[in-house]
Image: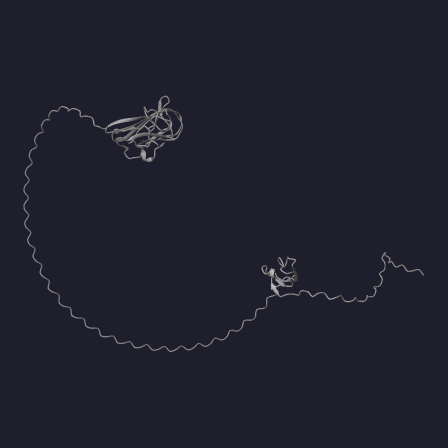
Length: 344
């Protein structure tokens, strides 16, 4: 007979029966003894260099075994540690147990009896008050002496009659006018300065040297009383110009300090000015004055002038050196006059 086909209808070979298990092989030799586990301690990075192989450490709720002496790193990431016990997930929180019943309140103990209050001692008797002594009699008041009589007032004498007013006499003839007296020694005078472009101005007639080097010298004592100016300008800009009348300025100064300034005249222009500007001002003027501008006929200019006395009374003494300072500079085409009254 032919051998039966061993394939199933779907083309697969029929599985054969499983053979019997072979004999067990001989037991291999026993391996070398391991290092064994050491004591368990909580992991410390500072103490890790002292760990020996087999040391068990705990870290983040897990247990680890040290694989080599002086391991490096942290147990959960370093290859120098083997996980021994890994922390499992936190279990669900158990249900809260039922609250026990409240125990019965014990009975209140009996209140002890109040002790007997001791008796109050007897108050001693008040001593007898001594009798008040008798008041002595008041002495007799002496009699007031009699007031002497007031003397009689003398009678007022009679007023005599007023005499008759005499008639007014005729006015005598006017006497001849006496000769005119000599003039007083005090007189007014002016110091004339010519302009410079800036800083100290020059005494008129000065050989090209400014008034801080060649000043005007007074011959008598008195006061500064006025100032006048005649200035020819072309498009003088709007600004504030200070004109300082000074005395005794050191020749090495390019500008006077306050200790050398007697008076300051302030010229304030509010618009550009072209033409010849003139003004005068006295130390006694109150408030500001307005300059005239000739272009070509005179008219009030867009400017004001005020006088400020830095030294009260603007006094000068015989021999004082007077100079004139202007800042910022205006023009060299100008004439300035300082008026003073002195005793010579």
